[in-house]
Image (cartoon, rainbow, N blue to C red; front, side, top):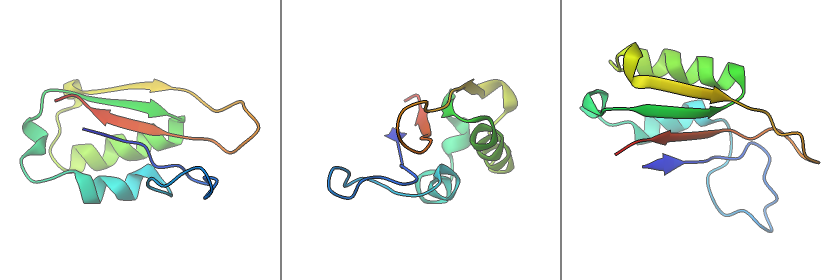
Length: 86
């Protein structure tokens, strides 16, 4: 499963999720998901820290949480991406 909400998308070109990724976790992480093998997070440091804290609260062990920080240097606002390996 992967989810990629954009904080400030162009409504003419983006029909996907909008806003911060952390609230999306409440929607997409289900009971029992903490047994999934890996969680990979890609995004800004604050986003990764917020997501990591929420995932730990949901029972994900720290060793299953991985991240890579990045920021958007293009002509628009920052973007984050969260993916969970199947």
